[in-house]
Image (cartoon, rainbow, N blue to C red; front, side, top):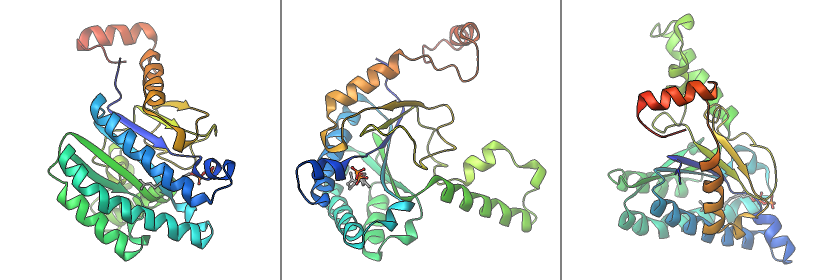
Length: 248
Ligand code: FPP
């Protein structure tokens, strides 16, 4: 089985999971945290190197205030409880998004956890928090614009690499596989630049029900796909023979 180096997940359906059971939505999010823990463990076992989770979008700030507050509280508890597990498992925490919009208490433990786990190298757990791809691209354009204004960069000389380096994900390779749960077939402003060649996988399962077995099914399907990156099948086979590696 071909294991994706970078797996990204849109964890959708917590609210519906709760509503189907006539429970408050926040209980769906709480159950969603259990799925997060199970999937982190499984990814580490499988040898995934980067796991990016869409935990809170730029648009999620518009949800009812009590849900936003409950989600932030859940995130705080998750970060506090998870730190020792991350250390034990050798997982490095990273985060992307407009992190200065997070409540101070959350950004403080987030920064501390990122710092404390910086030396871990078995897997990167990258949380997208207050993240929106258009917001990230806008901030990247502003950064490049400032460099042009300072005379450090020439507009016509901007390359795709420069844009990649100005994004929050500059230390992280592009995702190989993107999974979205809950049956919605869209990418909702998530990693738009970075997923140009990413394999997409949609499942009906709601995030709290997304199990290790379902993750394996997604990776099995990913393994069967041929990633051509714009080349023909024959060119790709030649390239693989020349590279001497079986990745596709
Ligand atoms: C989408 O479900 C999920 C979210 C907006 C938040 C995801 C958060 C978690 C899984 C828990 C916190 C995460 C971490 C890493 C601690 P939804 O509410 O949009 O579901 P719905 O579409 O059914 O309403």
